[in-house]
Amino acid sequence: MSATPIRIMLVDDHKTMLWGLEKLIEGGGGDLQLAGTAHNNDSALQQASVLKPDVIVLDLDLEGRSSIEILPQLLQQSGARVMILSGNRDQGLLTQAVRLGARGVVSKEAPADVVLNGIRSVHRGETVLDPTLMNALLGQLSAPAPKADPEAARIATLTPKERKIVAVVVESNGAPNKELASKLFIAEPTLRNNLTTIYQKLGVANRLELYVYATKHSVS
Image (cartoon, rainbow, N blue to C red):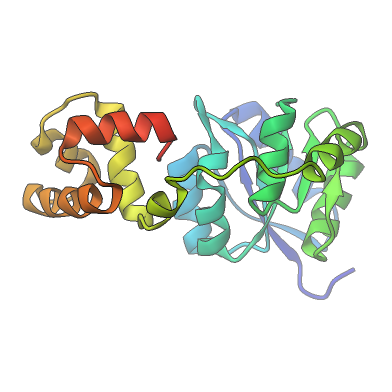
């Protein structure tokens, strides 16, 4: 047993599942400690940044959005190791999660001891894969990487804040700048300045071109 408990943050959008996981951690032994919980992408980023947990147990599907899109930022902001605990069997998504830095993938159908030992292993820096997923995941991970998107270099220049602005532009579907600024909690002139920078980085001329570009290249 570790002298310092492993601080765990749970991220799941189902209240019953979250409650069950909380009880599992609380009864899992003195080496495990519940640091906090979150229920969607935004609260996960916010809580992880504040709590700085050792391990984040992350569901892939959060209120209709994939947590894959925040995984790199989640890892960077928290400094934690991430274990995916999900009922999603999409091999492509699971492989992408591992490629983006997740240390483990465990099914929600796994026994309690598998989940708890998975957390401990991930905390030690080991890679944990559910046995039923291991062969498929390893097969995909060893396959040649797909040809790089020629626009990837441009997209990589966007800051997390700029990516958030692009995501809101896409989601808002033509809403005026005033409404976008309100959603982003920034002033309208600040939004315009940020949009100008984004246009320059991506080689587009206006919001319509940005919408088309972001949709085509999955920028968010």
